[in-house]
Image (cartoon, rainbow, N blue to C red; front, top):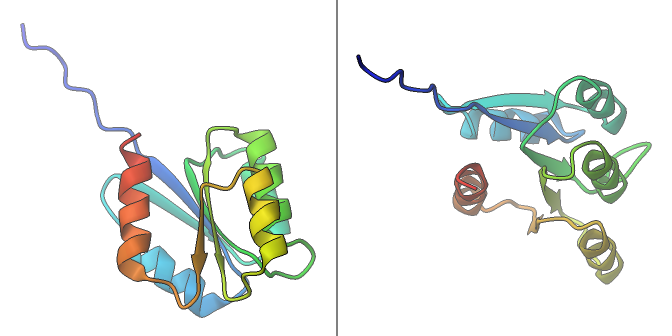
Length: 128
């Protein structure tokens, strides 16, 4: 009798950015057969999604209306402590770095994003 081969688990990625072009670019770039990609335009929409949907990796913009990426990261970690968080920002300051490390955020990326680094991060975290 042959052993049943388990299907590889789907790796769930959430992208939260108020810039539609960035959301679309990241969504397209991160597409892969073993990945499920969700994108939201506000932290509030992301939190509504997260109430019923765990994610493995979240790419969060730092500066968004209503709540910044570090605040959202903290809420994501409260819901799902094992979720990897990557903050993407064009406004990196010492204060935002200090706050990100206190959450803890897994990685900070400056915009314009290095797409090769972004893909490498997604691949690395999905293998953990």
